[in-house]
Image 1 (cartoon, helix red, strand yellow):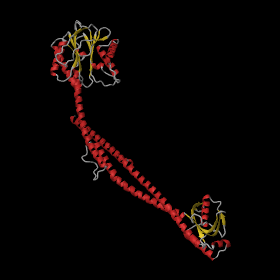
Image 2 (cartoon, helix red, strand yellow):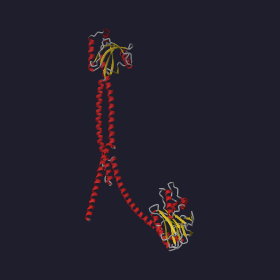
Image 3 (cartoon, helix red, strand yellow):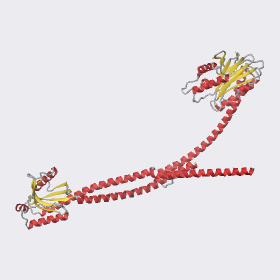
Image 4 (tube, rainbow, N blue to C red):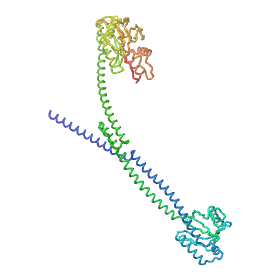
Length: 587
């Protein structure tokens, strides 16, 4: 049977160990999954990824701006080149035309060999230079008419050349065209004009699209302008060249941007992502292991921000490890001290008498009491015990300090006081001797306020002495009143102090209420003290409820808590209520 139980225990232990290992593996897998998700998010959404994307976008924007600027300059250059070329064609054609004969052709309308050579030359130039039209004519600025002398057109233009003498009006042309033709007329025929001898127009039509029109004057042998040559050339070739150039620049820009982006990505991975990943890995390792690294996570020949960050991380890990160890030790020390304080509290509470047990053999009095330290242990105490069958000793005291030191001083005072009471004497004599003993052996600055009374259970007479303690409350009849008794100096302040006794005669049903200053001086959230007036009011309210002495003490504690609510108090609170019932024949 024992072997069976042992085997069952081993089996259960093995099963528990297996479950524990499975749980750890599942946690590690979950952590690994989370780790992968983290690295994925780091690559896709991390700071480095944001910087890389920003750089790529910046490079593309710069490339696009550069391409646009280059295209603009190329366009201007191409237009200038086109203008120069068309001007050159017009000058060449104007130089070939014979100015002495050109007007004769207009008068006679006949085409001789010279005219045919001129026409053939213009046609050859038109075809070679891919012009739309080249014509020779005269212009009347006043009539706003244009008369054609020789006109050639390219085969691809679809136009029909005008015959000699064909005349049209440019009055219906646009304002821009009119200004151009008038300027051309002035430049061609007015030798006194300040206008240049060449004019050009960049225009657009449905048939030709964008084109350039250049006019050059034809001079006779006397040097007088007699006609003009007009060359019309489309800008299609220029725009085609411009498109090719723009496409080439765009492709080049994209390729350069791609190369730059690739270089930046490689550089970012080497200079940022790898150090960042090393720092993240070290952070995760320290989180799981809790042991500081011996060396920095990032080692570089030339220190940068990441190496400084990794070095700071290593120092931080060392500090955290040291502080964690310190916290652990402090926690253990605090737990040990809390355990000792709890033990001390239990010992202190054990030294406080329990009313039911202490007074079960007599029926002359009923006593209710409680003590609540502000910390684990306190400096207040109360005590009561039978000196003999006819005398009851009652004590309440408040040590000046709080905490462990006050508790130790309280325990010493309590035992010294009880030891001295056994030898007999009045309360004043007892307190005088205790004061001398404390002043002789206690080198600390602690002192204790103390009220000591000895009740004659037969007569109801209390012989009491007050060593700096709070005034007791006495109930003779229906209401409590403060008993302004004679105060002596607190015990333990200075030696050779004389204390004085006084007596109170209690009748059946009379009560005396003793307390420490923690009751009256307790405050609420507004800083208002509970106060002696509120104490007296609540105590007298107990009379209508016909509460027992312990009931009165509990009632006062409840009222105090409802007044202070959750405000932490800084003083111990102790209460004791005694009711005299008179000594019976059997007691």
